Image 1 (cartoon, rainbow, N blue to C red):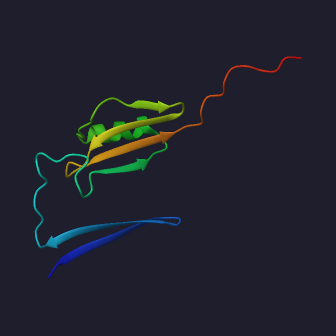
Image 2: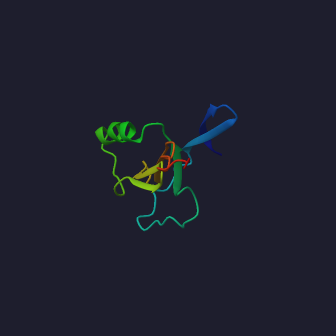
Image 3: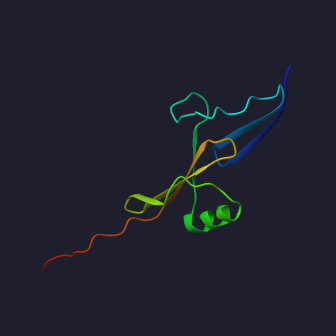
Length: 105
């Protein structure tokens, strides 16, 4: 028998369902866990202002995996460890810069 608290977070047509098992008690994460292991190892969040979000999380003592990276023009990502060791990705998508140039008349 299990005792579970379930929360639904909805934004438009998307629903994220979160479970917290009160019983049975869960096992701690393995110290040698890898991204390729089964289970939740990575989750991503789209944010509108990556710098602002990083500042807020930094104040809460979040452990970062490295520096913010621009993976392509206008798209920046940062990675941090979640509460249970999972990797969380923060992604900001800005309008890609327009190429310099023009027309010849």
